[in-house]
Length: 315
Image (cartoon, rainbow, N blue to C red; front, side, top):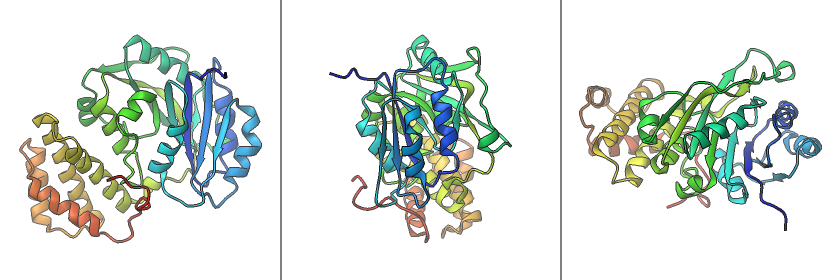
């Protein structure tokens, strides 16, 4: 019987043929080489991404390339890949970022040292194209923050939305994975993981390097506002037993997103009502559930928003 790997890299892919050779080479250059499998999930790319993956796959051991006939979004594709993962740990990164050679080894050490079940690293932005970008090793353990209240760390912190995660597979599954009601998982996945996790490490060293000219779904502000609002709103609905202080923070974030969307995305809500809710939340007062439900209905009415296919969404 084949031994199970320790780490499963799960990487969703959509139209990244130009950068994938460098992504794979960076994975192959990890120090020391991890006991790992590599699962690439193509989201019906219209370029040569699948061909590049199959051509370059020999650089890595235990590679699986999943093809899909329809575009469904990264939330669904991450869950699809994670469902096949055999490792005790999941390493989740984007398909257009080059992993730092010793980042996973150091993050794994930080996870063990602090008895954590989720670790988040930084994404370093570069002005260089992928062909000229050679990530440098960290060399030593960077500064790390820890918390036995992971959701509080996410709610109070900044910068936890990029795909730079090392998490226990059991935690990912216990949290329900990515929220398939949302097209983009950037905001919702950290919240869902943190609501279930025991201990979190904020690994303040660079895990991946983002080359110049990368395109991201999050560049669409209307989609970004929609998915960010529902990341928090869905958490409130799904986790009714959250402490009152956390619920206030989450509701205040919903109001803040609604205020930005009214001004920048044409959200059909009265500006004065949204401004009042935003200011109440900012001052630490409760934002009413009636306002949040009205905002949710307004976000649902926005045209041009990408949603996960109905066949995949969970109740």
